[in-house]
Length: 217
View (tube, rainbow, N blue to C red):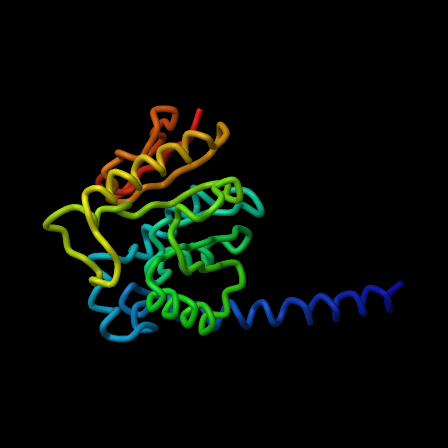
């Protein structure tokens, strides 16, 4: 019996060590936002304060959205993947998905994922309207569609912007969220809340009400 237990311990140790090594490899990037942003080129780093989710916000949102095991969380505005990468690090039992129209930003997200060796985060190049919302349990939005409004700071000019697109995306997202079952969670950061159906009740807020938590009832 002792030999069997010893073999089991050795096998478990062999399985555990690669996971620990991956964790330690990723850990250094999460000591601060500045440290995290250094994984990207300088041109991307300069956009961080305005466009990327701060680590403390990502961690707080991930704790809310990723409660339970195997949850699938979609970030509509992925950009360079900072929220998804951070959330995946803080909640290894959940799966985080980011969709982004700009191929160049997806490449930066994929490179960061490879360096950090995170296996529970996934990126898709495309428009969120091409996704099946039935594949996801909960959702995170940072400033959803805000770039389409006049006199707002844009990431770049590689995609189209217009008030018409803002209205279309808002209505589309509203309908998708409305079709989700009771218990669906939503976290919004700097949101205008036009896309949130009345069936979603606010259940909490952090960071001077900039980060809000919602649950469908």
